[in-house]
Each structure stands twice: as C-alpha cells, then as structure tokens.
Image (cartoon, rainbow, N blue to C red):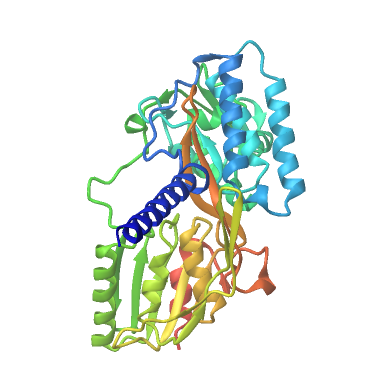
Length: 431
C-alpha cells in the first residue's frame, strides 16, 4: 500500500513539475503580454542627444519586438516584412556618433510606418514638455495653410506620411491637419525646424497672409478651450415627436456605466414606442469591441456573424474562423430601424461596431467612411525603448472583415454625408 501511495505521489509530483514548466515556458516565450508596460514614463526630451550605440540599441529593441510579437512575421507577408527590415537596416546604417531623440523618433517611426498598421507605431510621450502653436484661431478662420515656414504644405504632409502609421491615407491626411499641424513635436516629425517658432501662410479671398507662432503649453493657447465639466462619453436623448432615440458613444468602454446607460436608453425607447434608434459613433476612437455585442442583445436578432481573427502566441499563430454568435437577447427587444453615424474618426472598436451592424444587415450606416480598415492588425501591446523612452505600440492580432466580398474596403456608409450632416440625414430618411 505504501509503495502504491509513493508511486501516486511521485506521478503527481512529476505532473506538477511538468505543468509548472509548461506554465513557465508560456509566460516566458508565448504570452503576448510578456515584458509589456502598464503605463508610460515620460520620453526623454526631444532635443536631448543619445550616443549612436544607445540609438542602435533602441532600434534593435524595436525590430526584435516587432519580429517576436507582430502577426506579419508569421503570415505570408514576405514583402511587408522585408520592407520593414530593410528600413531598419537603412536607419541603423545612417546613425552617426550621436543623434537627438527627435531624429531617433523619426527613424523609428519610418520603420513602423512600413507596416501600414494603424495600431503599430512609435510615439514621443511627454505631457510635461509638449508644446503647441500659441494661437489656433487662424486655422479655424482660414483653414489649411498653403505653406509652413515657406515650404508648400503638401510637401510637409508628404514628409509626415513617411513616418505615419495608417491604413487609409485619408485618415492620415485628416490627422495631420487636425492634430499634427498644431504640435511642436508633430511639426518636427514633419521636417519643420521649430527652434525659433513656425510661420504659416494662408490664402484669404485671394490675399496672402502670414502668421508667426511660438510654442507654449496647451493651456496657454489662444483658441483652445477645455471643458471643466466631466466628459460624458456615453449618453442618450429621446425625440418622441419624431420617434427617434439617439445613443451617443464617444469611447468604447464596456463597463457598468455603459450597461446601465444602454439599458436606460432602451427602456425609454420601449416606453415611448420609439421606432428609430440612432447610434452615434462619430469621433469614437475605439476601445473594447464588446460594446457592440452588448448593444445587439437589445435587437431582435437570433444569430450574427463576427470577424475572423488570428492571434499571435510567441512562434504560433492561432487562427479563428467562421465566428458566429448566438444573441443573448433581452426579454424585450427592439425591432425598428437602426441607423449608425460614422466619420473618419470612427476607428478600431468603433469601426468594428459599425461593421457588425453593416455586414449583418442590422441597420443603415450614414456619414463618412471609417478611419481604419476591417481587414487590419490590432489589439495593442505596449513597450518603452530603454534609452530614449519612446513609447512603442505593437499589434498582436490580425482581423478579417465579416463580409469578405468587401475585403480591403473601409466601412462605407450607405448614405455618404459630411460628419456634421449625418444626423440630419437620418431625419430625412425616417418614413
């Protein structure tokens, strides 16, 4: 009896050691989140100099993490991978004895840009040192400048595009004129010498006007307003007169507040007999895609298709195909008209929300095409370079559009309008 017990304990011990070894191997070699950071420390100042060896160490850190984590290196993406690695070799070979953090940022950004993956990028992050042009009002009044420091604006945009991580050129272009052009770091990234400020040239009714700017903290910018009220990322309104309920979501956060607000919204819709529900995803940059699944539980849908995906675990790419969900419908469901409002800033999980509705024929899309593509990489892993402290984001999943007859296309609206006119279009379409 003792021999049997001893043998059983030995077998259990071996199994425990094997399981511990497998778990350790997974954590060290397979876990996508190994070595990631939860929060970024400030990047080193833009004008601080690094030695050539320090810069090369940072770029080696970047390429090794791309090779170890990004799905492209396990897919049939030989041309894409070759382009990234060739850019890496070029950047390393051009580093001299020393280099500024800003120039290293440009070099690293040119490497990640070759992936054309909007979720894989390098970024300088330092809110304490970030500076912006001291007056936004001319951009609001005159629109796009025709030149920046005497350089035609289209040339400046072209330089920015070489460093930008994007899937749609239209999105990157809008990003430049909406965010990059006002930032000292963004202008440096675009080839502008900002050491003595910047001058922008505008055309106004045939007259050429110039404005010179210095760079200041964001709170000192003329024309910048920041709401003192707590931002309401999820809200709704009920228009009983026109039988319209508008559910506004500016961030995809699937938490108790979202669930409670969504439930309150539909209870008001049911109580008022509303026949038209609008989901406003304009300006929504993404987050958790499960917000869409939760929303669909209030619709009279039995089953719906979701997107296929591939997930990288170390050396293994786990492919998930033919994904279909049985809808966990609420006791009371909505069977009226569903409209989804999108614009160029509808991105990532918000784009996924629109895709679920569009590709499953659950509703009508109105507005502008989405900012990124359904066929894309996503779900970010975050790292920080050892010397420059530049932030690194790397995708570890690959997504595929639900309706593969539209593979490679953005979420195109059924009715294309400007972002500002999208809601008005809903009212025009209501029977």
